[in-house]
Image 1: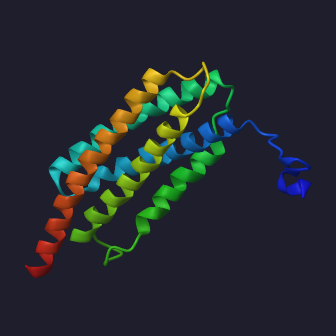
Image 2: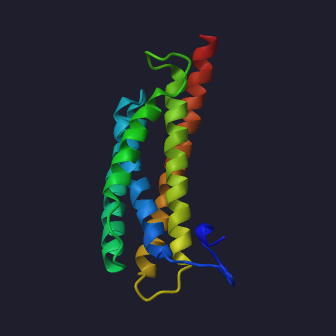
Length: 172
């Protein structure tokens, strides 16, 4: 039982859970920046611009997260970030109806993936807001959370438009 992290009185936390949590989100941030980098492949010009804007916001958010990691002595997860970036590139091989070319469905799937990535990040900001720690700047987290909700709103709008285009192409 001890090998599973269970002590006599319950779970034994030998790792710094906050540092580990921040490293997980730093890894996700690295993959998210890569993901939004492929937004330049989206068919819709507005979608390409929004993806570029969100990518820049993600870079700024990651800078904040790196500073917070430094504050709590959490090492940057360099190996995990590299693996996540490679994984994001492999994820581009998702089924869209045609393995070699973009289809009208490709934008729909890409925007759904971007939405899912931002949803995970928003959940991270919400979780950190539950932390009662003087090292956490609540005003910064509230701003980051609001920015994440704005990103989700923009992605939902683009997703609806991409879905309409895909379904219209089906009957053309």
